[in-house]
Structures are given as C-alpha cells and as structure tokens.
Amino acid sequence: MHLTDRKIGFIGTGKMGESLIRGILGAHSDISIYASDVYEPALERLNKELGINVSTENANTIANSDIVVLAIKPQILKDILAQIKDDITSDKLVISIAAGVPVAAIEDELNSDARVIRVMPNIAATVAEAASAICTGTNATAEDAEVSLAIFRSLGSAIQVPEKLMDAVTGLSGSGPAYIFPIIEAMADGAVHEGLDRASAITLAAQTVLGAAKMVLETGMHPGELKDMVTSPAGTTIRGIHTLEESGVRAAFMNAVIASSERSKELGK
Image (cartoon, rainbow, N blue to C red; front, side, top):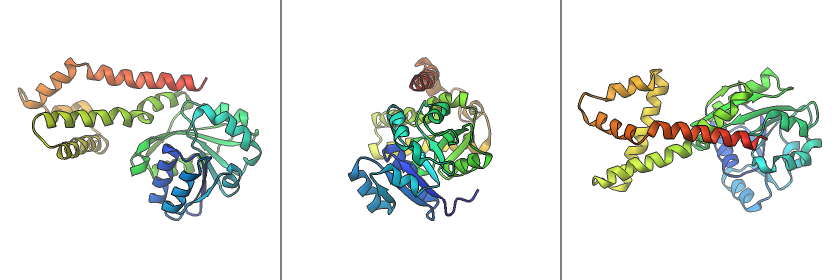
C-alpha cells in the first residue's frame, strides 16, 4: 500500500503523537502532516524541527487531512470527540491510539457513518521499531485496514487482531518497552558492579537485547531453543539462568503483562 500524497492529521502531540509523527516522516518524507494541540510551545517546536503544519484548532487539522489520528489520552477522548463530531465526515478515516477505548465507544460519539480504526502502537515508533496492532470498526473498509497497516508497518511491525485481543496487545507491546528499559539498566548495573564502565555497559546491554530480539524474529525459532543454543552444560549462562529462575523472572514478566492488560480493560469501561 503506497502512502504518497496522503494527508495525515494528528490531534494531540504528546509523547506518543510526536513519536508517530517523527516515525512517519522518517519513512515517508512526501507525506503531509498536520497537527493540533492546546500546548502551543510543542506545536511551535514541531513546526520548527519537522516543518509540519500546526494549529491550535482541531477543525483546521481535520479539514486538511484524509486520515485523522486521535493521539490523546483516553480520559479526555470523549470530550474531544464531542468537539470534532461534525468535522468528521465519511471521507475521513479516524485512527485512535487511545489505550483501552473500544471502537464502539468512539463510534457512539461520532456520526453513524464514521470510519474508525483502533490501533495500539508503542513508543519505539520513534526509531521505526514499533510493535503495533489494529482492529477495525463497523464502517471501516478493507482498504482502511490496509492503509492503517501500511502506516504502522512503516514504523516497525503491525498486525491485525480481533478487538477482544487489544487489551492483551496493550499489556504486551503497548506497555512492553517500559518493562525492557529497567532490564537493560539492571544488566548494565551488574556489569558496572563487575568493573565495566557505565557507557560501555549500557551499549552492550542494549545491543544484547536488540540482537536477541532480532534472532527470534529472523530465525523463527522458539525462544527456548535459542536459549539452549547459548546455554552450555555447567557453563556461565546456565548459572545466570538459574539465578533468574530463583528470582521468579518469568512470573514477574507474565504478571506485568496481565496487570497492564487489566488496566487497559478498566480504561475502556
């Protein structure tokens, strides 16, 4: 799906909105980006740094866009939808990245012919390595889904799932980067404890995580098989694995995903 000449508008330029804008422009320099927010300093900065079109009026962003991305917090989404309802006509594709908010809740606030796609990306869109999932609304077409997938695949990986699985996606990949950053820091701390300088330790820890993830994605092998490739009998790695298992690392990560998923469900009520 070619995205040339698409006009994408962002309502909201917070951390996630800005990450998506930067990622899209990095992959598609020929796309026109419009953005609106109540915080003018952020708009001025993005205009200066990225050359995008900015406004404090959501109506201006919508009028100039084919695709409208709702990059706003779920707590204020309903109020924003009430404000823009009459501006969202059937020729606009609406993409919401509001965590936990079901498509039906968005459609209920808009006109009956609104075309809505719900997406859960993550912050790694900033470096074009996001993991995203989409699901479609009542009026969204197959082409709308393909356009949405094309946008988010330009920022990393993207899949389509039934909406009932979006809370699980939120708990896994939506929140997931925040689980991994402390792990990188902790691994580096261990190396610093053993005498490595901080900068080198962080570089090696981050590259180790990146390389391990790439092996899973590119080899298609089960993570357990890859672990066994590194784990020699009576070697250094199995000693470290044993320590992780004693500390309950698997249960901790499972519980983190489950807890985040549950919170996503709460936000959708």
